[in-house]
Length: 255
Image (cartoon, rainbow, N blue to C red; front, side, top):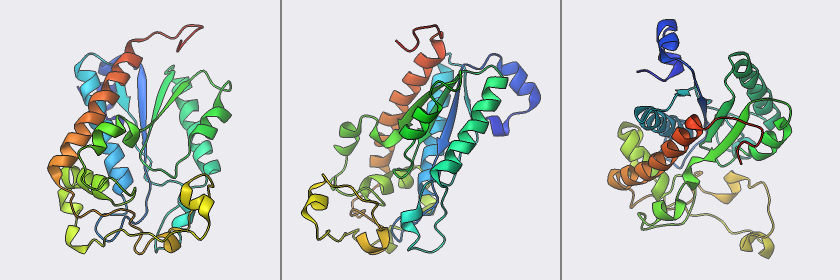
């Protein structure tokens, strides 16, 4: 049975029956070193969502995959050409409208599956809390069993176009990866000790932090590592979606 809303007909939607959970993938459009596409975060999270929903539904879940959002919060990458950016207020407005639609269709469980580190949804979720009957759950998918996933990487450093991220794309979309173009993903160190040690936070200007937007060496990436990491993430996400689908909302939900 189909579960990707954007591909479904009215007949298929009606045949699906009661929807318990909707999943909203949210990515970004930004450069990832010289070898990965601008849509890396979106392509990855959309496929992670699809695999996870499929696994959950095969076990009896009632989960619908909503159309994903390919643009995220990216103002600190404007130093690179054609970076696209949504403000957090835009993200809030979009979420309000999606939630309004879900409420009208009597669907009260929404999972935001985030694929981009710059998308900080926690404050947005707090802003919406108490203003809607929809229960919102947030998953930054790359943090799911992160320690297990990183064990598969030889170079565990970096966070953008690195070995892990490149391995995901090599498995999911090998035709979009040009590893021969990649640089080593070296970054510049701040002149401030607190920033270097991590206890002072700033919005990092990526054109000053990096050479070509990459952070971490991708050279040891391969599709087999990507497959194993994707399986770890989707197994755990699908189990949560199934559990959420089966759980009834009451006055103490989710406790």
